[in-house]
Length: 455
Image (cartoon, rainbow, N blue to C red; front, side, top):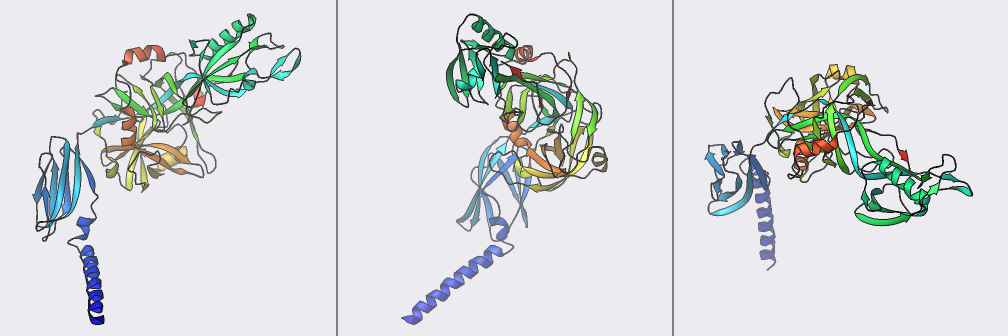
């Protein structure tokens, strides 16, 4: 009996050892290392390791065709997008299956142009409290007493929608002169609140106030990432625009991007990020509208691509799994309106099955760019990254202690955000309500917020 148990143990160990050796063999290990899910673009070909003791079989053969060679298998994505399953067989037994998704091809124009950004908030942003001097007591802030919080957005006052801070000022002044209370409709995250407040008279300037600092817009300079000619949409910046005081994302309520002229560069140093300084015209025609401000940049409509020195035709966009470590280039402006190419090294790819903002670590290696800027500077956010003839992503952040390095976001995640734009609203309608007088602003990747207004 004891001998039988010993034999079973030895046989079990031999099976385990044999399985491990087989998995490490050149015949099987490459086949087992393939992911469970693959994506191919229509017309794309991929080669996979072929083994003399295994064979690949297609379930339907509508989206893919396969061609067997002695040492590799060639897979071609057909013109019809769809999903196919490739089964790895050992005789009649299925060893594993790989699901292959065939996607339609997509091409866009890469950007690189410097742009002025004017973003309007959806509602009036509360950015601080102001103690109002009154005649019969210590200074007070009625809004603070009414539990209005920094970061709130005032959407309506007395039922009237607000687009500008001066509208709130006018209504508050009128209510104060009439001895009335104003009712604010406030957005706090996804929560909607109704808050009544009685304005008080400022004893110094004889105007009625709520005791708030508010802001209705932000502006600055960034870089255009892409333009999709088929959908007439664009993406830029590669990161969210946040309010300077509250550090919270600004909910987009309209706005515009405009041509920008780079006038000078503040070089970056360790511990001190550099910046692009630029101007955009006070009455310039907008390039496009701003409809969305998300973690992956700003997005909107654009009727045509600005002039480009390198690309007169769209180029393919890369899927996330196509991006690899190694040499690449970025397109950006460091002088005037001249888009230039600069070499970089992609040092690390962060594996991502779902969208995240920090997709890769990049290192500026181009001597000209290092001499001019010291590396990545504020205002270069959104500079497109090109690798193997495809648009793969955009520059988003700089490492504060090493301006030659920073983060990039995958273009696939930016395109997903761009595709969320509402199709119902026309470009012309948005353009009419987006344009306002513009002004000088020095370049910041997170934009420069406009001066807040006391209400």
